[in-house]
Length: 118
Image 1 (spheres, rainbow, N blue to C red):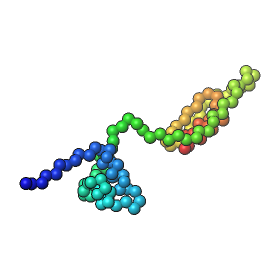
Image 2: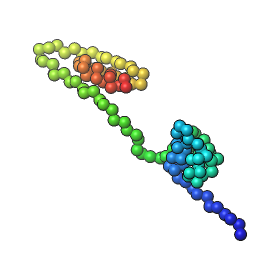
Image 3: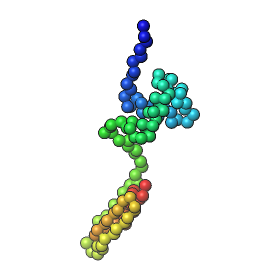
C-alpha cells in the first residue's frame, strides 16, 4: 500500500504571517517551518513572493496612527475700522503646496505649516 500525503493549501494571510515570523531578530526559518508543519524550502519560496509583493492581503482597511495635533489658534475677526490686507501667499513644502488668498491670519498659517511639516 502506497502512502500519500495531501497538500494543504494555506491562505495568503497565513503564509504572510509565517513569513513575517522569519523576519524577527534571531528567528530560524527551519524552526518556524517545523512549528507550522511546512517544509523550510516552501517558507523560503514564500519569502521571495513576499518581497515581490505577491503575498499582499486584499483589504479595505488601512493602518491609522493617531497623533497629537496642536490646537488651531483662531484670531478674533478684524474690526471694521482696521484695514484688511489682501494678497497671495504660495508655500511649497515639496510634498504639499499651500496657496492662501486674501487676508491671512499668521497664527492660522503657522498652524497649517506646522501640521504639514510632519
